[in-house]
Image (cartoon, rainbow, N blue to C red; front, side, top):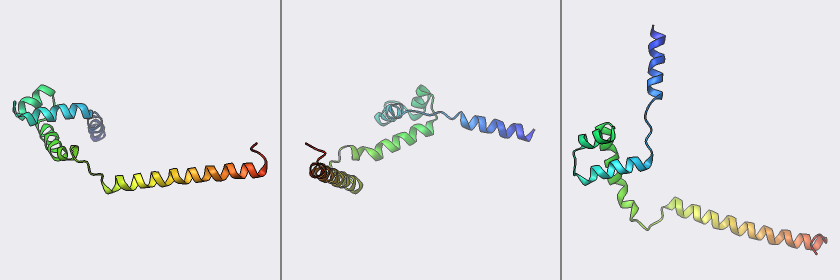
Length: 107
């Protein structure tokens, strides 16, 4: 009997709902508007009120970053790496063409 209960628990936990980002944004925006209570929004969208509160909090925390023009240090590092790799590709292409020409493969 214990094995059956454990199996049931795994089934229930694997049936956890997954929401896409658009849905989360819609619910969170509705909560930020304050036109309805969290409980009403949760009922309208069939989600738990705590989940609505978490999405609202996350939206409010991330909102300032939407209007930020500054790149993070990791974005700058990635851009610098990409520029360096393109430079190396160009240099290797020139060297390869030169070697082919010298060896007589390129006319």
